[in-house]
Length: 492
Ligand code: NAD
Image 1 (cartoon, rainbow, N blue to C red):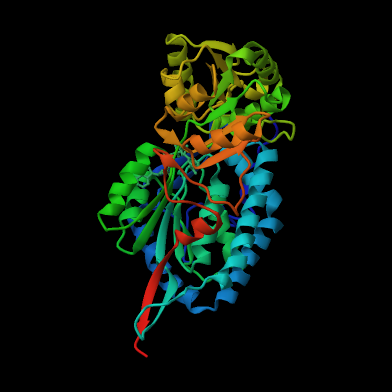
Image 2: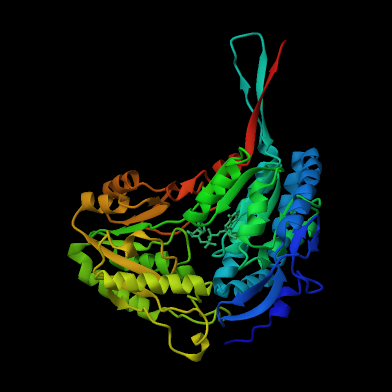
């Protein structure tokens, strides 16, 4: 493994080496139980910090209430300028943030660079929106003047997972602030460092204290306190359906609405008339990038039976050639799975698939070489002979494992794609324009790609159907989730 200097990676953001929450413009150490951070590439702990707990959450909420007043009292153009400057800080610290994400979350450095740049783009995009938010004048039938004012909720709580930590943080912080809210963000206890670093950079950009807080802590203590606190007026959750359901119930105690961005089991559909070479490359990127730890991963690969053997052969050859290894190595395309619990889940689901009759065509094993001896590594895995009723085709796997499911015709492909409780994303590969748009219209999913996979942009709305959640993130729709309209009536 390449040299992993954790202290050096942290130094730009944690000046005195103390890791804690970002509260009221400073690092605040927690008082709860010890939490160990483990480097997924080595399986070894490299840092311990204390769970934030209720007192730190309370301090963050108080600071958020005060900070939001200052923030909302500024002009919209001033807020936009500060958002732009946060984006500039992120750009200026691109290499440092990418390195910290790489060594702490186990993501390949080539991916973390791209994701950090996207965070800068998110702040820049919403910087442009800040002074373009205005209401309507309604032509009511009486003599009144009736107009709307889009207003922030006040304080919003955001809970995020471990698979794309800084990306997800920026994805939710930028629109929340653009709309005039203060945000209290609790990233996953397994990957909090780059989210706290974003808090640090926001101060350098001139953001008033308290407008961003980042809680370093556990879900069942700090997360519960942050979602049930009296001060929070909206909860945005990105994570698993199981936790999402619990969090929506927690928020409901205070009549607080939620946005839920949950998991998926997306169908990637390949027809015989597709450009198969492009489709194979796309199918690999769909499931293997990020070691499959992506909510939109194309984990069900539906292939028309007439090209099944040919396509499977191309897919297996491709999978066997993808470089897996040290995330610090720029040649690495697939790094480790983020944590041991997830590693065990992936292996258990593969074993269950085999027991139900699926066949391992590629991968399923730890990669060769000393670099991968101790971390949570798995070779890109292709499972053949999968039926859509097997657990491997129904449960989200969140690992570099694709299930190949054959189909006969378009009607069957759509039926299989829709035979899932999830509805996050999907794709179709075909040369026929009419078929492409028919399939796009008929698959139940919040995002759908034609002859492409995984392209997303901060300008476009993103979100789920069914068990993949509700509400939307990014784009104009994501911004609207952070605002509520007030209707003002004037007697003229
Ligand atoms: P998770 O649900 O286990 O945890 C997510 C977060 O919730 C963590 O920060 C955790 O500490 C917190 N949490 C747990 N219990 C809580 C409680 N009772 N109250 C408040 N907070 C609590 O998810 P994970 O394993 O970290 O992430 C993987 C999941 O995230 C997958 O299902 C994946 O599909 C999903 N995901 C969805 C999207 C999307 O946009 N739809 C994006 C990325 C990941």
